[in-house]
Length: 205
Image (cartoon, rainbow, N blue to C red; front, side):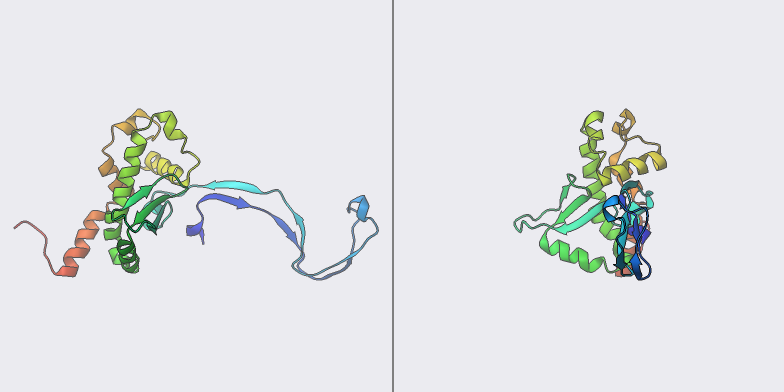
C-alpha cells in the first residue's frame, strides 16, 4: 500500500473497544458523567487523539514507475485536439483528446508499452512544467511549494542531480535532457520496444 501514499498524510489516532463492555464506568470521567455507566459494543470509538499531518515526498523512481505527480485525464473539451498540461493543481494534469485518451488507456495495460507512453506524454509535460518554472522568478517558484508535484520535483532534482530548483543554476539546465533523466530515459526503451514489435533492426544503414 505504500506506493499509494504520497503528499500530505493525515494521521488521526483512535481508542477503540476491542470487546463488548458492560456497565463501563471510570473515575476519570468528566464530572457530568460521574457515577454513570455505559454498555459499549466492540468497535465503538471511545476517544480521539489529535490529528497529525505528515508530508510524504518520495524518491525519483516514483516519477517513472507510478503516477505519483501525474494525472492523465480525458479533456472534456471535445473541440481540443492537442494534449494540454495543467500545473495549477496538486498533481500535474495531462489532458488528452478523447480518442488519444482511450488509446492511452488501452496501451497502459501493456507494461512493455510504458516507455512509449512516457515518451509521448510525461516527457513533453515535464519539459512544459520545467520551462514554465524557469520563466518565473525564484520567489514565484517557491509559491508552488505546497503542491505535491513541486515538492517531488524539487526533491528529485536536488538529491539526484544536485540542482536546486530555486537557484540560478536551474536556469542554466538543458530542460529536455533533464526531463528525460527524471524518468529514467524512456526513449531508448521505447525504440527497443518498437523495433522488436515491428521486426525492424537498429544500426546504421
